[in-house]
Image 1 (cartoon, rainbow, N blue to C red):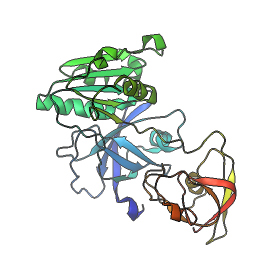
Image 2 (tube, rainbow, N blue to C red):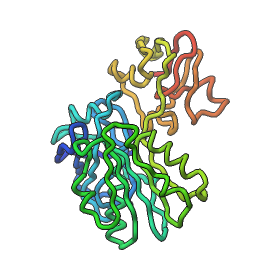
Image 3 (cartoon, helix red, strand yellow):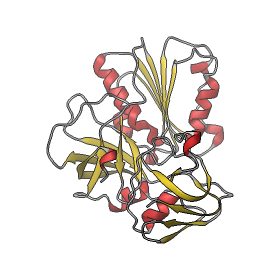
Image 4 (tube, one colour):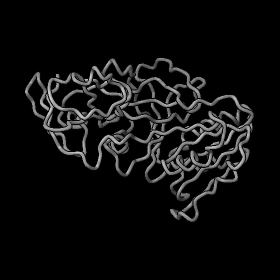
Length: 315
């Protein structure tokens, strides 16, 4: 566990199956020390058993937590993170977990419209429970394919207030119609979390709403590999080890697969944790961190690749 990640060791103390492809995990600190409080919408970043860093929303109440509770969906095109949680994170498994952060914070408003799609219910459910306890009016719309694929179905249905649970059965003609909720801007604040099509629809429908009134949480991974990417190799200067990087893997993933120790956090080119000195090679820089003057001498190995030829890294 790298110190730069500022993570603590947690143990999976329980896991339960919510749907065929969604599991809930309860995580408790190995050292037994108190946990930082957090607000609804918060998330933690954890190192999955595969070594991949992933962000997961916190489901439980954060006012005085003694554990972190997350729900993880096995993604059909998992790059190792969610699949390893389902296959390897059994009770007793130790994981490195960072302190909670919140980029999806509830702001003060007279009322709220909460919209969730699929696994996006995790932060939305926490918000709904918080607003219920505070006596603040809200409406919740929860869209899934079917009842069998709906995590926390009974919990959501039992909430007071106006709750809509909509199953479209995979039929586009049966998708929920949100237009009535967005035709005329109201004094509500909207919070939306779910798959990309749902988020894009809400963004389009709310384009005429006042700025800052509609909030989104999206953990969808960035496009770390592209259809036209090609394989290449990296050589580690310290040992001379040559690691092949397939077209469908990142440098970071290839190094991890080869047993080379690395540090990472966001794995999307936005945090700078995996910044590595470049000895030689032509780099296709895809990160959002490096300054122009750094690009000749450094690379973010979580997302950038060789533009042509191979690379030599100071590892």
